[in-house]
Amino acid sequence: MYKKFLVIIILLLSFSKAQAETFIPAQPTMSTKQLRPEMSGYMLTVIKGTEPIRIPIKIVSVVPQKPKTNISDVILIKILGKYKVAHGMSGSPVYVNGKLIGAVAIGWEFGDHSLCCVTPIEDMCKIFDDSSSVKTASQKNLALSNIIFSGIRINNNQSLENMAKRLGVNLVQGISGGPTGNIQTSSLRPGDAVTALLIWGDVEAGASGTVTATDRNGRFLAFGHDFTQKGSVAYPAAKSYVHQIIDSLAFPQRLSTSMGINGMFVQDRAAGLGGVLGQYPQSIAAEFNFKDLDNNIERNYKFRVIADEFLSQELIQGLYAGLLEEAWGRKGQGSISVNLRLDGKNLPKGWARKDVYYSTDNVVVKEAFEDVSKIINAYLTQPFSETLPAGFKLTIEASQSPKILFIEDVKTVSRASPGQEVNVEVTLRSWRKEPVKRVFKLKVPEGASGTAELIVRGGSVNSMGQPGLEGGYKSINSLERMLREISAIDGNNQLFLELNVDQSGNELARALNKRKGSKHDEEDYSNDYLDEEQEFLSDTKERRMNEGNLKIYNSEHYIDGLQRRLIHIVGK
Image 1 (cartoon, helix red, strand yellow):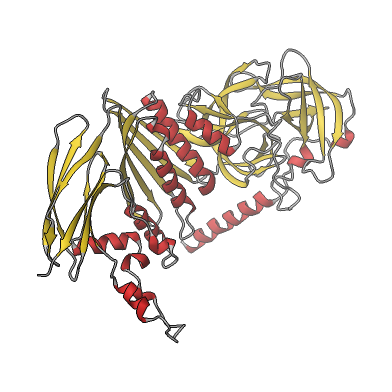
Image 2: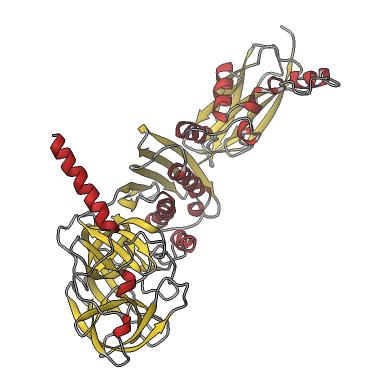
């Protein structure tokens, strides 16, 4: 057993060392110094299906770059014959005299699509180096790749468009393919179409490119330019099937679908992407369940997202909102019930939060997904503990009808004694239905005097804050505490009954008056403040509910309205 363990460790160390070694292509190469204008050669790429074909080219020029750029030279070539360069051909290897000179990388919109630039192979071979000279820099203004979405329509999908703007990428409509998550044992060859996946499963998103070269360590180069500019990455690499080249005056697009995962990209650098075969990255599991209550239609999507805490949250929240637009197929007024569940490392029992939202404008893009996005972002980027592996499950029930409860009236006593329980009758009305009455009990705090204020409100009205955090008396110091405080945030589906004692003559004011002129400037005044001013919101709610002066009622509706009543405190 011990020997087996040592063998595994040695193999892992050998693999890590192999990744850091300079890439030596299995194919013979030629440097840019040996190139001359009018030299002939060919480009290897897939036009349709899976087999690369040779397309004749000639060298136009070798263009030197500025000293501080990440590419030494750029090779300008002209494609001969009927084919033109297209999005998705990035990384297509170019050969002169049977030797690899580099990868197709750059073209021009509304230009001559027979002309393109090639990233020299000597620059691409440095992608795996630890050298700081191999930096990440964007060539995206001219780069031949976009993010292709399949399994969801991107046209007029405002949520996906907003996500693309935040990420600084262009979206292209793809077509659905087979089950992307399948593991493929086949190798990748120079000229093969390959996709760098960000999302895969029932929905797919990624950039299509081409394999440039392979080495004897199971590594490969592709794209000829960067994709996400992230440096070290872990993106699935999937061999792809090319269906057609879509012609365009702006820029042609190679339309392809992924066939299965062959390995993963581990480097995303200025000169291209570097990957390894037979290695598969960790991922985040995500699920989206939708039910249209008006038409009794249900949809379910399961997919995986790259395990990059900072990029993943943008992808997940953008796709969730986009899937709601896709599944519901409408915009405008409506009500949605949102249930978000998190599972992950250090969450043995998981965590969930449910809320209800209503809008007269467009419920799809309003507060619902702002809240979901904040929670996902907070969980994935929190600094306290590892979150991966992780899983997210979002369940939504939607209706065009206003799923609202209005607080119509409140009745209670006008006088009460300290420690007395009082009945509070709340009249609630659903949208255009007969009102219903509910009776709750609240307890007047012991030692109360003067006037108490009864507040009955919906969770979206005058929400309870976090004075302890905002005032600097408390801080979040663990994942458990963070999720506890998120859970404590008032929900739109909650009815709050609060009995607040008039604080005009409270201990704080008296204590401060007593201390006027005190010589003990460094004396601790912290005990003079009210409990809520130094507590977490969750602790305040728990304490007050135990004291009986706060009641929270959870419903399946959005609760709207605010009512106040005054109760005079009299002696026992």
